[in-house]
Image: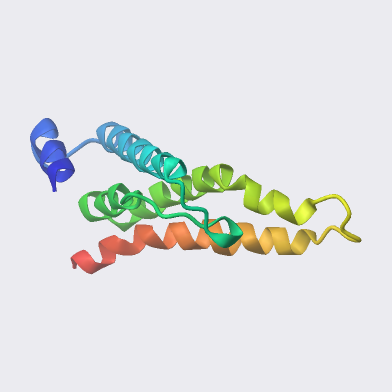
Length: 130
């Protein structure tokens, strides 16, 4: 709610140009990524690379509520790419030395399902607005 109020007060309402919308979305995606990075300092190690985040998806949901589904899905896709880079150690575990074969299609499925699809769906939160 404070983020929403700050955006509303700073830009004087929700009638923004595309440049201001893009800049606001970039700042909120960066804020979501910083919140996700803060979870790396929590000493909780879950199996298969899972982690507990500190409301890192809230800025993405706010983008979708404020600017609509199109901006929400686009920003969520960018956040998914950043999360995939952050969680690259999970994907690289499939390519450990000593394996008889590299199962590349499993790595592609992990990238698609665990990162791209899962985080991009968050951008659909603006549908609930109507």
